[in-house]
Image (cartoon, rainbow, N blue to C red):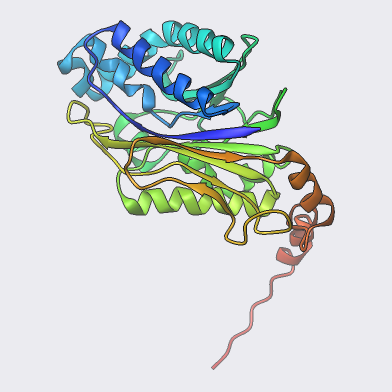
Length: 291
């Protein structure tokens, strides 16, 4: 498959038609460049709050529900584009209202109209302490025509046990939204580590640029990136492709599922297979006092 990772800027929208045109343009561009799998970033859907006006978009609480209200229309749009261009799309994650509090939810949409959802598992300090966005449903392995796909939303990819839970996936998608370079690099290092441990490919997308109309996503720094195990058949740096920081664009790379299967079976190292050997080692940690 060929994957496309977005470095996606947010806009203040004047109309729903403007949003439709924007998403259609991004999808068309990736499809015309041969992409089969398109990955939009975490909280890229926050621009939908602007359709309710500037006061709502700026208000942390009201913006959550303004975006959530638009998700059925956004699902329909992405499903239509996935079918038209015969691509799989991870739509930008969005706050979705539940019976308690909103969750941060991403949708994987197939050309046949299938829609799978993945919720963020572990909230950042801003999400939990200020915005009151809560963890959602469990991690999911999606069996698709492109292979087994998992999703770790931004901060989630910094936790190795979450990545391990998706170890049967060929590809793990990492939609992100980070304010500064340090945040971008934390998520990128996490994505690269998960590719190393699981001997798979990870695809990281980012929100980029400024959105002065939002207190939640006012400044975002990032780039698209596609990462791999540094082993047989893959680049030595563990990077299949990387975009330029803060430049709105798609970043593309071909993903060879046979190469993934090869390193898992007969790579220079077998991190994925040897994972369980850690368990008895950490149970026998000893303490020694040195003077």
